[in-house]
Length: 514
Image 1: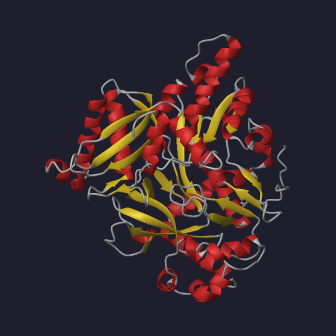
Image 2: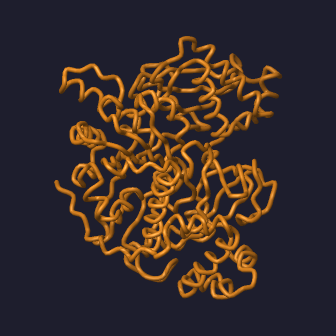
Image 3: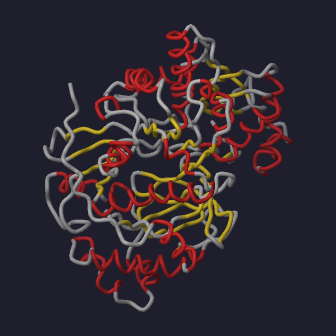
């Protein structure tokens, strides 16, 4: 069935200030930018139900709006919004943000599946400007316009006309954002037409994309990196089948591919594999955003951290994960501390936890790395291994052994009379290590070097070294198909769990004995 798109080209006239000027402005005055943004947000929402409840008019006119906001507005989680979102979807107005909402993002994060986030037209507009800023910043950093003279392969998530509320659109934020992509980009730059991009079956969509683009001049890509290895394998197989060829890399098919814009999951887990699959020289540009709003982007392809975008409709607050410090705005953050991140947005989210953990690498300018999800920690036995530590250990093991992974999940090994506790690493390898024990040893050694809780338990011989369980190719995709109603661009695999349900299911699919 063809996908019936709404008429959404009526986006607001772009600001006369260019995205690069906006970046220069907030870098010059980061704290002032955030304070002015908070005043603007509370002023605009002062007449809403939430604005009246917390006295937004007073906050907007206060001499110290951040202090008054933090005194009056507590941190919120999704349960505080659930009933209001139901009302908003029915068409009620002026509840959390002025006016009505017609776009709703279904969050697909590992900690927040099924939560519905209203997206205002204001948020769609600032998100649109953010994506333009990422592209323009890349262009400025490489000073090479060649990527503009080919096609962009951008793969958004699925959206649909809300069956419960006709006239509204619901789905993944990347799909909703695609609706407000500038018409000139959709017409002349986007490689794949809408009817293919929004096919409901993810595997069929990838096949159709490959068939449509394999002989195109693809110069830029934008997608979640966890799905790129699958797309690249399909592309190479399709090319070889049609041409009787024996190509082994993407660069043999798309020789002009220059840049890969990445988001949705951490790029670092996939970068080495993607570089090998592509085969040629390619730049990677990562951005960090959620259904609730965009946070940061890689303003230099050679950087490992990202610049926080402080003027994209989001007022940021942070709280140390370990409870060692107070709630702070951007002015009070310190480098090296794991923070929960809270946002107040031009979609009417107020001091809302988005479920991610970040660490700042710099405060002049403000730069960060994503350290994982708030639920990404294994601490069943006091080992306190965080998601970013596990990811770095896995990357280190791949680097030292030459292995390559596509997906992984870590679960506890229960303590018993016959066995010490430990962690089982269920890993789908694209290139397995020649020595699994050596692979495990690298992970174990790295965790002991960076995690004092883990090393104490290992030194006391109270904890097993990592158990590596190799899964056959396609295991995670099969698990997603079995457990998710719909697999799409933003469907993610939980990296850690303090239970065994996911690990045992993966092992069963792969033919291992759980």
